[in-house]
Every structure is written in C-alpha cells, then in structure tokens.
Amino acid sequence: MAMKVDMSALETNFSIPCLDDGDGMHLSADSPDVPSMVLPTCADFDGFQAATKDMVKNKRGTTTLAFIFDKGVIVAADSRASMGGYISSQTVRKIIEINPYMLGTMAGGAADCQFWHRNLGNKCRLHELSNKRRISIAGASKLLANILYSYRGMGLSIGTMIAGFDEKGPGLYYVDSEGARLVGNRFSVGSGSLYAYGILDEGYRFNMSVEEAAELARRAIYGATFRDAASGGCVSVYHVGPDGWKKLSGDDVGELHYHYYPVQKTPVEQEMTDAPSTSA
Amino acid sequence: MECVMGVVGRDFAVVAADTSAVQSILVHKTDEDKVMVLDSHKLMGASGEPGDRVQFTEYIQKNLHLYQFRNTIPLSTAATANFTRGELATALRKNPYMVNVILGGYDKDAGASLYYIDYIATLHKIDKGAFGYGSYFCLSLMDKLYHPDMTVEEAVDLIDKCIKEIRLRLVVAPQNFVIKIVDKNGAREYARRDLVGDNASVDAATTVTA
Image (cartoon, rainbow over all chains, first blue to last red; front, side, top):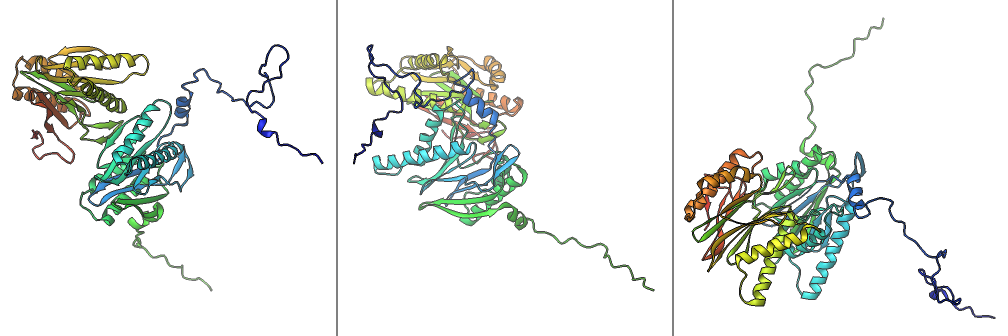
C-alpha cells in the first residue's frame, strides 16, 4: 500500500526552471502551464482605455439629486440603466450606502461608481479605526476626489454626490471623475439633472419638514424621468439625519404620474345610442 | 468663461474672480470661491479646469506653509511667484496643470505686487491683468483707467467697471464675483458682487462684507 504524497504545492504557475543540463538553469520557453496575458492589439496602449470609454459613450443616463435643509440632507435618484437606446435595467440602486451616516449617488459608469464608493467606505472605516472618530464628509469627499484626480484622463466616468451628517452638521459634496469637488447646498447630476433643477430650484426652501422635502425631491426626479428618456424606473428618496440615513420611499414613476395627473373623465359631447332596431 | 483679474495700488493689491462653477451648459454653483488665501499676505486667483485649479492652488498653499514651518519666515511674493511658475514649468511637458493664476501679495520691504502666471508657465510682474474671455473687455478698460498709486476705492471702482462690462458684453457671462484685497493688514475678502443665487441683494450691484 503506497502513500501518495501531495506534491501540488511544489507546482509553480509561472516560470518552470529546467533541470541543469550543463550550462546552468534556464527557464522553459514554452511550457504549456504558463499562463499568459493577451495584450490589446492597438497602437496606443496607454490611451486605449479612454478611447474605449468614448466609444461606449457613457452619457450619464440618470437623474440624481441631493439637497441640504434644516433637518439634514435629502438624497433621491431614479433607477434606470440604459445602453444607448436599450433600457438594460429599471431597478438599479443608484444610492449607495457607504456607511450608516453617509450616502453616495451613482451617475456615469455603474461599475466605476460601485467600486470606488465601496473603496471609499473601506477608507472611511480605516480612518475611524486609526483616529477613533468618524471621518467628516469633507474628508471623505476629499479622499475620493484625490483618488479620482489621480486617474484623470484614464477613462473613469463618475459623477457622484457624497451626502451625510457629521459633527459639523449636514454635508454635501459633488465629486466627479474630471477632478472637480464642489461643496454646496443642492446639486443634481445626470442627463436629467437640468429638468430636476427646474423643479428643485423653484420649490426649495431651507426650512421644510422632512415630508415636504421628500415630496420636493420625489417630484423633481419624477419631472426629470418624464422628460428625459434615459431616466425612469423608480424614485428612491433617502433622508440623512443626525442618527444616520433612512430610506423614506421608493415609488414607480408610472404610478407617480397618475398620482400627479389623475385621469380626467372627459365630458361626453354626444351620446351614441344603438340605432333603432328595424325588425320587421 | 472664467474671469480672474487683478490691480495693484498704493500699498495694496486687489484680486477679483467670478464665482461660477460651470459644466457645459449647467451652472453647478454660483458661489465658488476661486481666489485662495495662500497665507496671511498673499492671494492667488486661479481659473482653469476644475480638478487642476483646486489641486494646484492647494499644493502651492501647503508648500508655502511648509517653507514657513521649516524656516520660520514666510516666502516673499516674488519668491512665491517664481516657485509657482517653476512647478507649472516642471509639470508642463509631463502632466500639465491647466490653470491660469493672478498672484497678489504684500511684503514689508517690497510693498504690494501682482504677478501674472499662465498655464504654460509664463511669469510677468504686472500692475494690472486679467484672464479668461472677460480679459478681452477688461484689459483695455484697465489700460485707460489705471494710474499708479490708486486708492482702494479707485481700484475697486475699476474692478466694478470691469465686472459691469463683462456682464454687459460677454455672452453667457458669469453673474457673481468676489473681490479680495491684500495690504499691510493681511489678505481678506473685500466684497461680493452677486446678481443671482441665495445671497443676491435686491439692488443687485453691491454688497460690502469687509
């Protein structure tokens, strides 16, 4: 009965040195087990990522908004993902929960936003562990902005708002992949943002109840989904207060439409009646 | 579209800039402060690509502070201008900063001075200057109305005339401006000129905060 020794740990996946055959060890040139990486076949190796991004044409088909008011921050977004004229999903979660008191919104490339927000969440947690206190919204947004600045020109597509509540109160920052970082009281990002701004700017007041603020946000996102083809699905509304964020509502925009514009029974001008029967 | 301008007078320098943050046809903000206070007696008004502008001016500001920590004395305005130009020049053929800068400062020995530094690292010491589309309208106005040893009121009046001309003649003109001053008492905000936004005043033309 022979014991079989498991030698798999000795297998190397990269270079496999040949046995010494007189002139020293040398690497095997074409061993079948060596994995290789396929390089893109193009002239401009460094710029092909940006060129691909231009080809895909991420036009930030979305509407997201956030604003500060006296009771904290309201964050709202639609849920449609589109690839050119094709709607790939109506149920995308565009408000990303970075940690229990900070939210990020997604506009641009979904993968880019999800990855870098997750990465930001990690860095914020590390900051908490090293410094024994929560990171401020200014600090978190600066971390993200510096990372995105270092990747400038490489094809990232991110238009995000970092919203949250810290020791100084409510905080809202706009950060994008061009390197911009703006502090402000209200922002809207995405292809439908111009439509949302119209409703948001008109109805905004600093002193509002949470319900009024949520309704303003909902109405603004709905208005954008109505006019912008690349926005739609459901409107999610979150509120960030001193105790952290809470999701307030998620409404399908089709239902919202009939809520705002109920079907009117049109007055009947002429009643049509059956022709008198002409039975003999 | 972004306008930055500066004027030097008797023992003071004024640096003004618009306060709009714009992306294509959308105005993100109307109160973005583009004139950074580098240290107690220096102002740097900058215009250019959004990430570059903030990153570059903060980089210069932190390096200035570092010099002061290491050497206990602050860098002079002339040395700051040359340092800034040097950083732009070094980065130019690798990873250029697309930022144009008007640097104003006050030194005890040299008095007030103003420097023009553009994105390809040109450096000039100037009495008056401007960047952006607004410069097409302002520079000739400044050439006519400027004279050496202006008082603060005269210099701010000149800036106001430039702002008025920009608002009148530049298509899609920025609406709001900030005016900052640096003199022997330090660098500070002098006034805002807000036509739109949450802080716009009723008579629209002038609000003084100094």
